Length: 387
Image 1: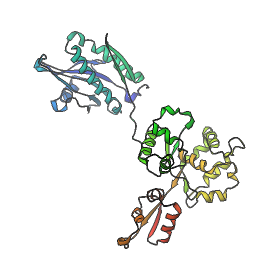
Image 2: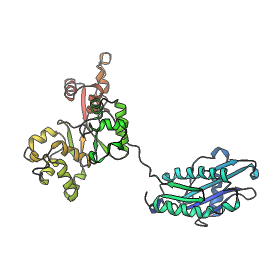
Image 3: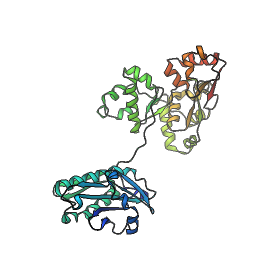
Image 4: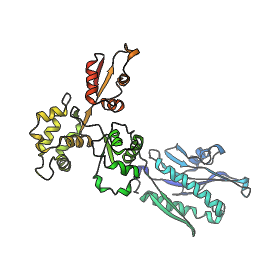
């Protein structure tokens, strides 16, 4: 865990309750007087709420503040009006990314509920006085290191941790090629589940998901789930299938290779054909990248630059360029222009919508790249869109 940056810091924590005479009020807040009475009066219906909103996370933006709370109601005849209503809220700046704190607010509400049910902590005026010190410790520790361990009493300690939110990884398809972003050998096999251990051997940066499933004799849906899991944890990335008929173009980031000495060293080590022998020259590697472009296949590149490729592995050259965002694949998408043969259309023509690449169609139909190419070339009603 790490320190919260200025924009995402917790500005204030306050404890609000329903007083039998005064109604909704802030009982404690740290720092003191951060939330004005005027602000609280304008939003208190979302802090101490009607039953429909109780035990639900509520985020509201008001007067330059973002407030997250989870209103709680404990019903019992021992309380005045037969219920105890409270809410411990976190306050942020209006531009803060507060999503990562939502599980903490929810857990805190549940913890205080349990504490009240077991020990009467919140309804006892004496024990409730410990809340400001507890809230100050909570605020300081979460802002400083993203975790906290705060003792409540002799037998209770609260442990909380801010977990950064991660974006959902992209969907893994049959024609995607998983490639490790770090040395596969550096991982201990016990770190993986059994299915992942079974497919690890076949993840070599060139096998696509469908082939990995076939080689490892594992159901393709299980392979996709394993690959997506590794993708989520940033262990791998996905590349398109490598073929010598592929076309690639340079991206603006290729200039970084000229300017960044560390990237150069990493590149030369990665693309070397014989790492133990003569390393490739940077000039040759950069010339090869610049030789890529529309209409130039990898096969064309190999023919034109045989001298530069003497010490360079062209497959790893392409792989490194894709991983670093210095080049991208230009894919072929076939489009069927007419449906005149609708009655006796071939099954594979349903993929000719312009939405499916050659890679995907080959995986879905079992055709080889050349077989598909021959079918497309022989049909005057199919055109190919490169993108």
